[in-house]
Length: 257
Image 1 (cartoon, one colour):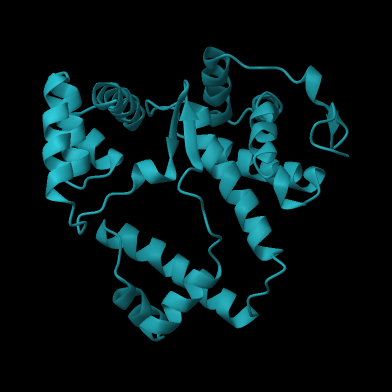
Image 2 (tube, helix red, strand yellow; image 1 turned 180 degrees about the horizontal axis):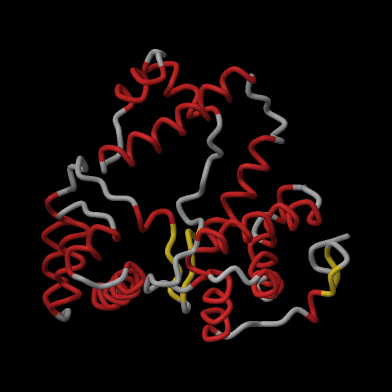
């Protein structure tokens, strides 16, 4: 069974429904009230979302039926944990959950085998990290995790690194309404000694931008902030920051070109 065929896991993908946002909201409301049929309808109505994620992993040489089934597990977890009171589309929350589930599957079935003891150390470290984060309201340091785990910092770092797949900076984190956010958009570098000539050119080129665009680029490139940090500071969504940043950079490219 191939990913570009009409059927996957015995399901005719051409016949899968596409739910409108209002329909999703209503189903999620009924799910919260314990309606099992609504949950089934929500799962079935979002199988296209799973399929779109599976297609991104089509070059891994894995059986697409297996990936689809694993992706469905991620979808069900997303449905069970999604908070409809948040001003976020379900797909924005669901896609990372589906991707994460498939990544865990690929990691655990990787041909480059990681020892069982190292995997156990990594998983325990992640559990402790989540526990300490909930208790302190902040992300714990490696030292704090190692102390709670009763292991050395080096062992914790090695274990966590061993179970992480390399990720492209251009890999999408999520897409909402056409505003795709990539891994590189969430990275800030406060230690980068930027060439002063480039900074002068950049600041000069920014003069023709709108005030909001100037502010975003200034925070991103001179303040070393991530898009998430910028969004929080100026009071808009990360998707909006991404769109405005890309638009501003296009204007600068045309101006410098």
